Length: 80
Image (cartoon, rainbow, N blue to C red; front, side, top):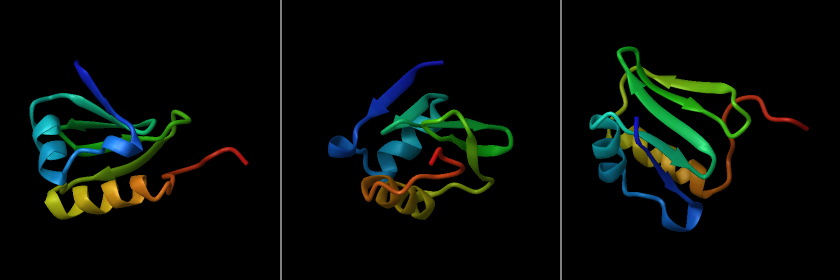
């Protein structure tokens, strides 16, 4: 599986993110990895914790996720 990586300074648009996931690519967004499978879209955070599952992941969900990543908000459990 190919992985496409993005840093906060160059995040994809929601449409670009959906296109990458649709073509069976893993997408790394500033350390968070997104993978689509039969259950939906999984997000594994930068610490290796499966932190989210969207069973329905469309443009609105992609936009919210990208906004949160751009704001530096982390998903799931993180070390303190």
